[in-house]
Image 1: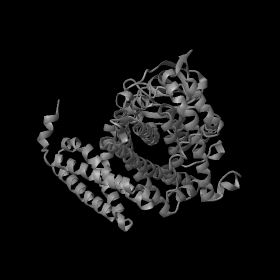
Image 2: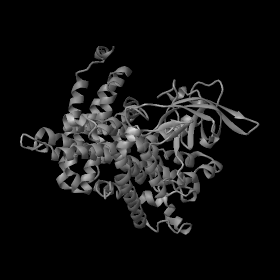
Image 3: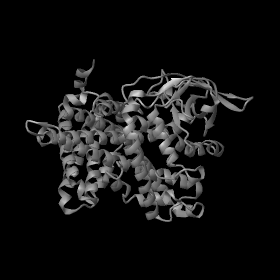
Image 4: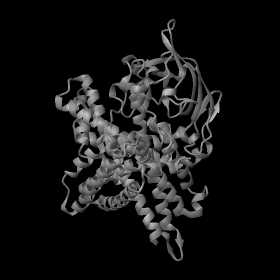
Length: 567
């Protein structure tokens, strides 16, 4: 039997990170949940054992059900019948298996029939499912909407909607519109209050909505008449049972074909307000989008893992000129670089997830008790770190996923271009990761703030002071020099006092920061386990070379040279 969790020891390595003890203690309210629920963990070891078992179940479902269904789902796809989206047969089997295993409602509290698991194992489940079928992971991952309802909605709404997830309710976030893609401030779907029925009514069109015909949808709409910016937008929850939305069509996509992407028409659709008016985009959707970007990070790592394994297996079996192609430097270098990049992506993924876990746990704890001064300070620190790391994660993991899928096809050669092997589907699925939930270019816009305000530099300097084994000191020395180089080149770009010049180099600066920050993450993974020494060594030395190249380009680029690139 194939189990995608037990066949990958890297996952348990991250599940047992030292910060997990603090995360679990907060999530379990210092283990007082055991007084209410006999199945709540007694202590940290009990909780970790539970997470391990849950991951094994998801790993088994991913390996034994979801992965074997992936090819048929890709060919069959969802269908639109009588204004209802009908999943492919394999998609229904996948979801039914997870519901029967009691695994939907992953992070929700037990009072709503949830598992009360932290973000880290939830993100890990996303990686496992994505390795099996990236398209299905979108349906699985949209239970993020339940987390948003739990965090911001009234008790009345929470009691009505949250218990439905455990029973198998699906979710969607209805944000994008035909004239409002990345610029969500331009959303025009109208929300008006019905005084007679004491509910809100939604009218308008949403486009490119993943799993658009879901049971429960979070809808961003303009509630304040006469407004044109984010301050006029509110967030609503819509129940599919009200049958007031027409599914105009399912988009025919390049990849992730099992995940229905819909155009929706709302006509006098009843809805309930989440939280306060005017805070829809400013607060609630920003939180939801950050969770979605974390989800794309896990999806990217899962796709990359699948691509690497397919390429490795093929390279071991395929012979040319009398020996397996994995024996040729041109091939084994590609495979090693793929493996190193996946280790780097995964390290960044779970570091980001831990920061999200901690700040959310403190926020929920603050609703139950008064936080100590030290706890309040920690909550702020972890939230800033989560905000800093999230766009870097989305950028680095999605771009890495695409490169790994590309290289995997190259290792297959002409065979990989045919539909005889799963790598062709994996390659198509990978492409969307740099586009949705904010393109790579938008992630640079978000991440460059951490360059400009010194946040990335502060992280680098803090990491430089952490102890490592003597045999790893040479890697820390390289990273310290890379940090100094990064600080100097940022200063040089700032000295030009030219906004366009700064924007022109922003991606180079963000990628330089990423090479140093991720280098430190891998260094401390290597400090915990010798398994990661090789990855840390290769990544840091390659990162140094990339940063030298970026510095050389910037040093030889005058502000007026930017004009040469204008079309």
